[in-house]
Image 1 (tube, helix red, strand yellow):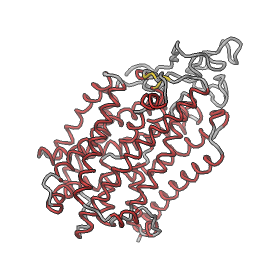
Image 2 (cartoon, one colour):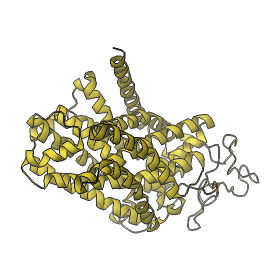
Image 3 (tube, helix red, strand yellow):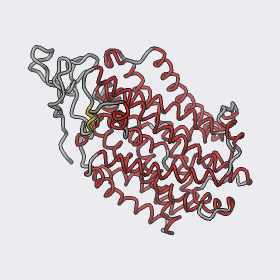
Image 4 (cartoon, one colour):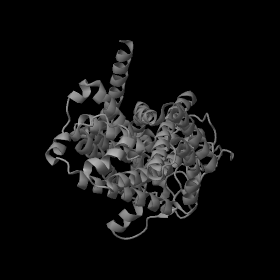
Amino acid sequence: MAPPSSSPIVDPSDPPAGPLSAEAGTGTPAAGAPGEGTPAVGLPDAEPHGSGEPGWRRARLAPSLQEAYRTVPVSGVGTFRKMLAFAGPGYLVAVGYMDPGNWATDLAGGSRFGYTLLSVILLSNLMAVLLQGLASKLGIVTGRDLAQACRDHYSKPVSFALWVLCEIAIAACDLAEVIGTAIALNLLFDIPLTWGIVITALDVLLVLTLQNKGFRRLEAFVIALVAMVGGCFLFELIVSRPDLGAVARGFVPDPDIIRDREKLYIAIGILGATVMPHNLYLHSSIVQTRRYEQSAPGKREAVRFAFIDSTIALSLALFINAAILIVAAATFFKSGNTQVAEIQDAYQLLSPLLGVGAASTVFALALLASGQNSTLTGTLAGQIVMEGFLDIRLRPWMRRLITRAIAIVPAVVVSILYGESGTARLLVFSQVILSLQLSFAVFPLVRFTSDRLKMGEFVNARWLTVLAYLVATVIGGLNAWLLVQTAREFLS
């Protein structure tokens, strides 16, 4: 384990920004600045505003993902060229919205309830666009990712509890990736499920190789896999020939979703699979890989282009998630196979029901690409969360192996004891766990971006603050309702 790093990172090409040195919040006060001669860096119990930055207790430490920090230039003339320069982080975030956990919840929702839960996918995606936009703004404006902001704002016990909850969410997400990749290997190459789960531990080598090639190479690889998944499901949509009128009606919210506990369970699973808590931490960090100007106009431009990037990427994620549910509804629900929640069953039934031999193979290839994509972003999120909350820098291979072990052990046990049916239930359950952790990331994010002392002129407008808190409350309320319904069923 590498020793904790609290050294500020200064880019000499940046102009001074405010009373601090070139990178705002690096902990190196300018002459005559508050706290001169008493650096706040590394002092865990610094007094409020002791960093010289209004709204923050400590000076900003070295950024997470330090090896990629401000390595991507954004210079250039013209809106389109700058859009291309900022394009990338949104797609790394978007892959978390189309991971194997989404497949399980979307397949279950489509096969059991037809097109009804399309409205949940749409609303979840709109929530994601809003929250990811706030996450990128926090990172760009403050120079802190969400984990670092939580560590600075809250007491040590609260910050530690938030870290534990986030690690649980990452483990749940990684569990879905492990199971999904193992299922894809089993379907394509007939590798036993248990061995497939073990093989997924080796993907740490792929992650390390791509990280060493540079962040833009990593982004390009992820975008290529996203395009592959999108192309596969465009093919599936064409051959499944869904009822377009029913699809359109499915995007209109149905109150019965709230009243029916089974629909609500799947709906919250979809919400957890779509709006992932660790993606908020991830996005607030990786937007800082761009070398935007540290002036107010430079940050404003960066916030705008980062929002465009994530919105386009999340729109593609919406298409893929909706396509999975639509294919399930058009193929399984329509034919009376309403209990198809297993990815393996979907694979076996697609080709016979659609009459297209390649349908099942394309489905499995998309699953494999989805699992590998989510592996990459899960690794980055785990590194960001640990470095941000604890200021502990583990070597990437060590961090990845620890995370993989946490996911592999329960997956192996379940696959041995219960076989394929157990892994499908574990997939859906993992997404509900993600949803239950979501409020603990959303409320701090909304609070920080609505704080004028922390955000300055970039603080959320009043209408945006109200909308963001409304989204956070809806998420928390749905989770509480699910817990009450589950408890009632258990007691009865």
